[in-house]
Image (tube, rainbow, N blue to C red; front, side, top):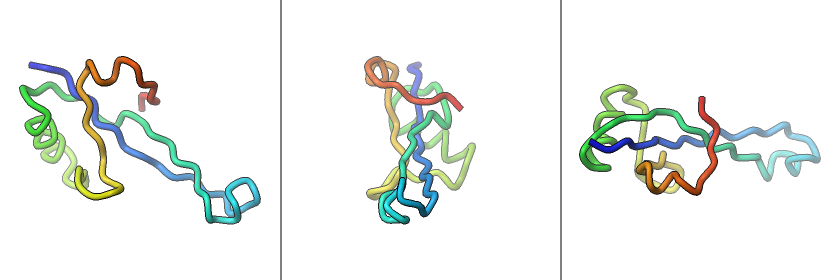
Length: 78
C-alpha cells in the first residue's frame, strides 16, 4: 500500500487592483485528502467514494500525487 495525496485548488478574488479587478484570481493549492491504495487510479476511486464531488479530469480537476512525487512540493495541509 502506498500513500497518495489529493490536491485541490481554491481561488481567491477580492475584485480589487490586487487581483486585476477580477481578471487574475489568486489560486491556492492544498492537500484535501490523504489515502492509502495500491495504485493512483485506486486512490482516485477511494476518494470519489469519500467525496462524490471530486473530479480528476479536465483542466481544473484535482490532482493525485504519490508520496515520492510530493517530496519536493509544498502544499498547505487542511
